Amino acid sequence: MEYLWAFLVGGAFCAIGQLLIDLTAMTPARILVTYVVSGVVLGALGIYEPIVDFAGAGATVPLTGFGYNLAKGVRRAVTEDGLIGSLTGGLEACAGGITAAVVFALTAAVVFGRGDKTTGTVTNG
Amino acid sequence: MKLTESEYGKLAKRRSPNTKLYKTVPAAFLVGGLICCIGQAVLNMYKSLGIAEEQAGTLTSVSLVFLSAVLTGFGLYDKIAKHAGAGTLVPITGFANAVVSPAMEFKTEGYVLGVGAKIFIIAGPVIVYGLAASAVYGIILFAMQAA
Image (cartoon, rainbow over all chains, first blue to last red; front, side, top):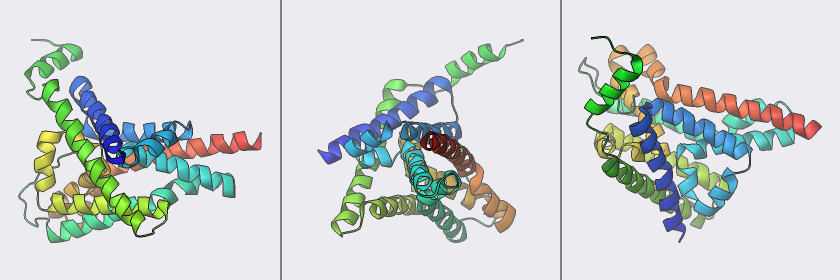
């Protein structure tokens, strides 16, 4: 059941993204920004937490989960440390994912990146 | 021929081939759902190793980012993305792809202003607005707790 809900909810997040791309001609970058900010807002309002409890990775893997994590981190930091937590909690909670992306990207550029002037394609550009 | 922006938009839309919703939306749903299932399997694996919930979540994100970086490196992620659309964009693997792709592509412009700067061409806006929204939430939360 766990996998079924992860599939259905995660799939639904992606289907909504596809509708936004096809119907509004939003660029992928705007979709990602919209998803993260929506995740923060839904997390702040306490709406996203029940979806995570219910759908697990179906809610945490889409980029709204990234936003939810930011909100969760800020909530904990503000509760523990006060106002300064609004500046520290977000990055603290997402540090692993962001640093991993940067380090792996750099590694991929060294290993796979072409040094010549042949152009590749940016899928999500 | 003079065209207003909305007229141009309509024309462009009619001409663009990829607006078959009955194909694109199910493909995005299927692939996106599958990526989330892989995430759930990875998460369960870490939890079964006795790793605490929160760290297991972080490890899952890191693992998916790694997987996406490898697939992007070999040019496979882009091949899947061609058919899956938002199904490969919306999951965290899509975020990772948006970091790895430009890093590889802009190696030609050097490691500092090529790789180093272009790594954030998509991730930058995501982090900027995500952090800004979370900071605003933090201030509101602090004000509510103080009241």
